[in-house]
Image 1 (cartoon, helix red, strand yellow):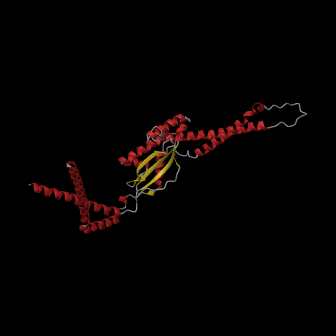
Image 2: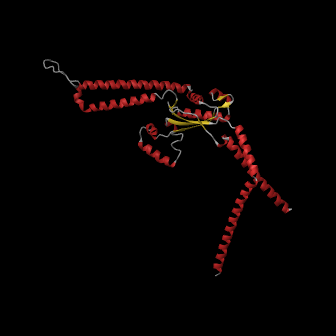
Image 3: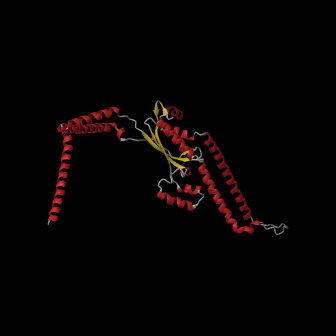
Length: 327
C-alpha cells in the first residue's frame, strides 16, 4: 500500500513539474511577444533607418563566380596544381607586386578572390595508366569505398586529364580576367617546349599510321590481283599470299585499329594548343549573398543588434538587483 502511495506521489510530482514547465514556456513566449509589442516604434525606426542606409550603400556590382572545365596536357597536372596553390597564397598574402605582374591586380583592385581546383574522377584513366590491369582496378575501387578521398588523393590526381576550376571574382572582374588567369597557367617555358615536342611527335605518329594503312592497302591489292589468261605465255605466276590466305582478315582488323587510332589522335591534338586547354565557355555569374543585398541585410542587422543589446542590458540589470539584495 505504501509502495502504491509512493508511486502516485512520484507521478503527481512529475505532472506538477510538467505543468510548471509548460507555464514557464508560456510566460517566456509572452515575454518575447511583449518585448516586440512594447518596443514596436523603436524597431520600426531601426528598420526604416536600415532600409535608407542600405539604399544609399547598395552597389550595382556584386561578386562573381564561374567554373572552368579544362584538360591538362603533357603530364602537367602537378605543375598546374602547384601554380594554382602559389597564386592562392599570393592572394591571401595580398602580394600586390606579384599579382600586378600576373595581371589580376589593377587600379588598386584584386580581381580574383579565391580559386579551387579539383579533378574529375575517371576510373578509365587509372585503368589506362595501369595498362589495363583489372585486378589492380578492382582492389582500388573496393578500397575507395572505405576511403572516401582515395580517388582524389595526390596519388591519383596526376592520372586524370579533366579538371574543374572554380573561381570567385571581385565585382570589378570581367571575361578578360579568365583569359589572364589561363595565360598565367600556360606561361611556362619548359612546359611549352614539352608541348611543341609532343605535338610534333603526335603529327609524326599520324603520318606513320597513314603510311601503314597505305602498305596494308598495297598488300591487299596484291593479294586480290589475278593473273590474266596467258595460256600462250611461258611465264609462271606465283601468289605467295595463297600460303597464308587464312590470315588476310587480320590485315583488315589492323587497318581498322590504325584508322581508329588516327581519329583519336586527330581529335586529341586539337586540345593540345595549351598546357591547360579550356573545354567549356565559362560566363561570369553574379554571386549574391545575404550581406550583399544591403537594403535587406542592414535592417535585419540593426534589429538583431538592438535585441542583443536588450538581452545584455536585461542580464546586467538583473545581476545588479541580485547584488543589491545581498548587501
